Structure formats: C-alpha cells, structure tokens
Image (cartoon, one colour):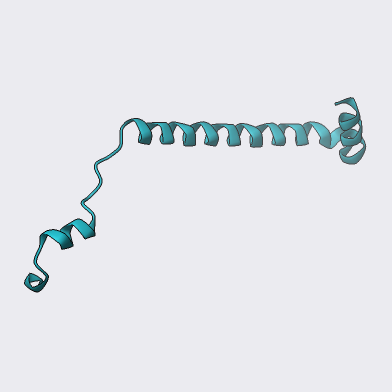
Amino acid sequence: MAVIGAVALLVFGPKRLPEFGRTLGKTLKGFQTASKEFEREISKAMADPEELPPSSSSDAASSPKGSED
C-alpha cells in the first residue's frame, strides 16, 4: 500500500493528491450506493413478484383461429 501511495504522490503531486482522493472516494461511494439499490430491487422482485400479463400463446390456444377480426 505504501508503494502505491508513493507512486500516486509522484504522479499526481502533493497538491492534486487530496483532490484525487476525494474524487475517488465519491466515485466509489456512488458505485456502492448503486450496487445496494440494484441488490434491493432484485430482492424485492424475487420476494414479491408482480403478476405477469397472460402470454399470447395461451390467448391463441383459447380462442378459435377464425374468430379474430
């Protein structure tokens, strides 16, 4: 970790390194929030599935072929 920090200090310089760290932190927090929201939506969909509309194949099987106008 110290080697990575030293390389970052050399590449970005002491003035831009805190700005880079804040930007990186905000970006990671945004990804974490999006990941949690996605996980919550998936869990919600799995726990309480919405009723799906009837498929067209079952409608076609129940109605006579010649009755469609």
